Image 1 (cartoon, rainbow, N blue to C red):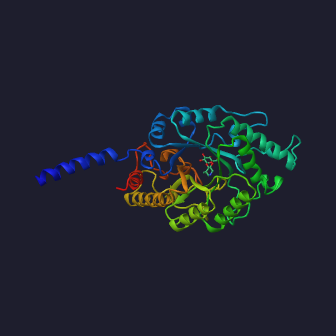
Image 2 (image 1 turned 120 degrees about the vertical axis):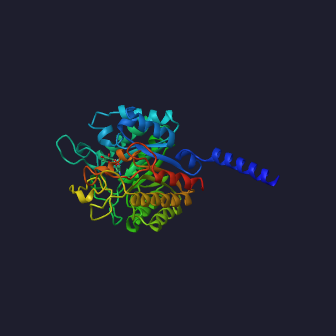
Image 3 (image 1 turned 135 degrees about the horizontal axis):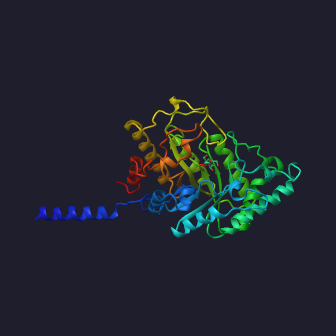
Length: 370
Ligand code: 9MR
């Protein structure tokens, strides 16, 4: 009898375990945070059918890898191009996703005309503010109520925590950041507004972001989240650095978006850990050691790294509101061409053929507590 009961219990338990085991990232982390992916042109237009199937099955949030950057959406003073952004937002709505807008104000990928008048002179503060307001109202206004979160200002800080001397800063002054948030809030009072940057795990830059958030809060400017990009390697940031940053921002009363996650396993080609898109390094076979596949030992390190990172995010699930991977498969990643062009990198959870990697399994298992 007791054997039959035990057998029955095993069967039922087995069934329950099968029924409950999540089969997608978004199901596994449902109730904890959104799981997002940055999507590219071929995925937005539907040309990459394999990628789109992965995105729809696995993710409940999307970010536009490039199509909403100023140079793409507003290439000339009187020309906006909403073709791709409209398709991007439609894709997210069709799949009931949390849709992110990236980004409104950045020193990079912003055409030179933005800062100059017809004669080539730098604009005055008032003229640049007017241009910024017009851009933000036009873009945010178009997707009001449909894009739920905007990266309002991207990468405004230097590594030492001071403000980067961009043309935004030089022409308008340090309050260009407040103004950008103010205009975004005017354009869509319901949208979450994010300050987004890399290397916020390093203490000096983290402190710079803390000061920034406090200044915005003191001025009554609505800021809802800080985006920690998380362009990581196997040994940076330490889990302590990551924990400390999430905790520090959480204490300020803002949420944290892990906004651009990937893990670079290739030899570092730059002196410092950075995600500065202007940095370049020369090709060299020593910097591209695994063009035909990753050795098991490195695959295991990557798997452990992803499990450790998601362990930290889960621990802070009250503060972390989304975790967005910067790409879908390894073939899509910017890390294949930055800072060295033409390398074979392995930074994401799906391999080049679209198959889930061991790191994917580890992230899924972690959520379901198996
Ligand atoms: O992944 C993006 C790549 O395709 C672009 O060429 C590059 C320049 O626009 O930007 C990359 O995305 C960056 C993001 O917008 C901001 N943080 C750093 C990201 C990686 O460079």
